[in-house]
Image (tube, rainbow, N blue to C red; front, side, top):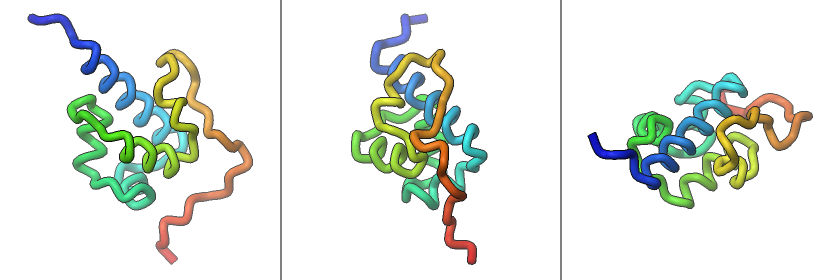
Length: 95
């Protein structure tokens, strides 16, 4: 079996970080999809490291998760923390 490429390692790392931030904020894939405009299947592929994600998509996801874009590139061992701890709830337009 071939060694994992650098690109695949980044895809896996970023996908893991996105999932960790999403779950830390108690958001489902559907919630994040509604907040970011990224389709649920695409989110699933990104979180699983199966998609080479565009920068514009990462920007939309970081904005939806209320994190700084560079947080997606930090070491995996760091605990995910939203950029703003005083954030009220999310408006998913259910009203």
